[in-house]
View 1 (cartoon, rainbow, N blue to C red):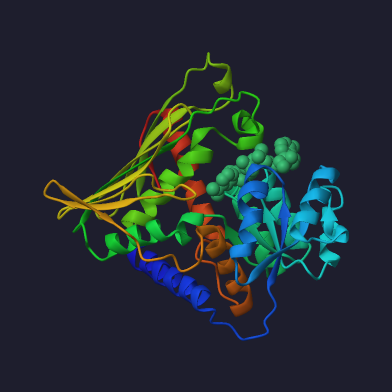
View 2 (cartoon, protein in one colour; view 1 turned 120 degrees about the vertical axis):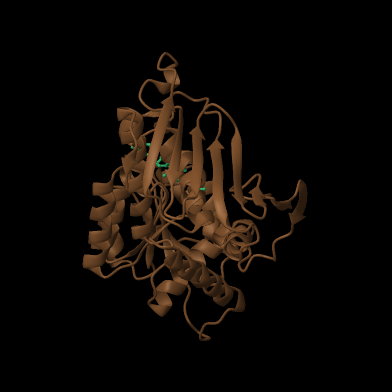
Length: 365
Ligand code: NAD
């Protein structure tokens, strides 16, 4: 993707969020109904509480393997009992007119299956990151949504987060001059060896599939370019029971057509959340960069740094912005700014990163 297209995306993002902020929608339009699939940490504690901050989205159904948890959650969020599904009865969601979107918040290996089943049930799909565990799965998800005439969006929340939006705007406006280098590191200390995130079959990989997606996304949205090659190196203690199946630490170097490079890291053995852009006139830095809240932004020049307060987010929170963006796209029949194709682009690079680390050579993209 060229810089022009990234700029268009950025402009579209601003417009999208501006229309959310301004409530620029015909009065009387009904809110878009979401079915939440997976009542785990992110679905239950992060996404469900966010519907109160939405203008155009509401939760109308739940899908869970735990009936008691589903009933308690339904009661809390005003979801009727008839709109509670199990994984076995999921396909009956096709007959529920209150559900417009299925939001897949399951372990990574289940993203493709539930996205495709949702599309076949005639529903639009929001799918969590990473989009899936392989390029082939991503392609099948895109094809299923296309065949059903339904939208597919990836839960890349940073595209709706005020600090990241301001950092992208500053980078594009030349605040740091010509972009030469981006550094992006994301990780946390993964302590629980029983987690599905450490099982290759469920997660598709280790820290790269989980936190590395943020480093990769930041490298692409801060440069506004698509990489042409990647060189990667992995460091994992295979004697550590946590890392019997998946990688701990992986770093990779992306080269961009302009000559800029990005040095990225993901890890399950250090807490890190940082993005730095260097240009020929200055720098732009975020730390923490991509958290749920409390992200901070600086610009710097000649050894001096200034903290920037981004303009208030167009939506109340990044999560509400993300949910309402898909609602807007459905109402206005537009493509989401973080579509399935965007998730597929990342997955192609992720496969190249793994290939490069395995074979110890630069891989052309
Ligand atoms: P989690 O383990 O807390 O929840 C997973 C849910 O899936 C649970 O409710 C579990 O019961 C259910 N599930 C159904 N079948 C399962 C099976 N066979 N094995 C294991 N669980 C099964 O995970 P999470 O942290 O909520 O992550 C879910 C997804 O959301 C992942 O894809 C993750 O990458 C993504 N996520 C995104 C963000 C973000 O900021 N965008 C943050 C956290 C997680």
